[in-house]
Image (cartoon, rainbow, N blue to C red; front, side):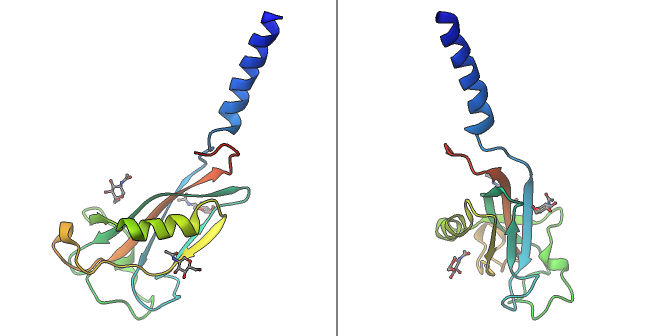
Length: 145
Ligand SMILES: *[C@@H]1O[C@H](CO)[C@@H](O)[C@H](O)[C@H]1NC(C)=O
Ligand SMILES: *[C@@H]1O[C@H](CO)[C@@H](O)[C@H](O)[C@H]1NC(C)=O
Ligand SMILES: *[C@@H]1O[C@H](CO)[C@@H](O)[C@H](O)[C@H]1NC(C)=O
C-alpha cells in the first residue's frame, strides 16, 4: 500500500517535470529598424514551430552612434537594424512591453510593428537604431506560470 503511494508520487513528479514546466526549445532574437511601415526590416515577425508557442523574454532598444536616423525608407541598407557588440541598450517602457506580451504570448506567430525611442536617456539621449525582442519557444503547458 505505502509502496504504491510512493510509486504514484514518484511518477507524478516525473510527469510534472515533463509537463508542468514550459519546455524551452530555443531563444530567438528579432531586431528591426524603425521606418517604412510593414517592411521586412521594420516589422518584428516572431514565430515558433507548432506546438510550441511564444514566450517574450525581453524587449529593448539598441543605440549606436551614427545610427540615429528618424526612420529608414527601405531595407537596402540594414546595418543599423542588427545588433553589434558595443551597442547601448534601454528597456522598452513597461507599457510597450505589456503590449508586446499581450499580443505575442502563447501564440505561434505574431508581428510587432515598428517601435522606437526618441530620447534614450541611458544611451546619450539619442534616437534608437533598432528594437530588439528576445523570445523563447515553449510548450503550451496546462500549468504554465
Ligand atoms: C528562430 O525561430 C525560427 C522558427 O521557430 C527557427 O527556424 C530559427 O532557427 C530560430 N532562430 C534561432 C537563432 O533560434
Ligand atoms: C534585456 O536585454 C538588454 C539588451 O540586450 C540587456 O541589457 C538586459 O540585461 C536584458 N534583460 C534581461 C532581463 O534579460
Ligand atoms: C497589438 O495588436 C493590436 C491589434 O492587432 C495592434 O493594433 C497593435 O499594434 C499591436 N501591438 C503590438 C505591440 O504588437
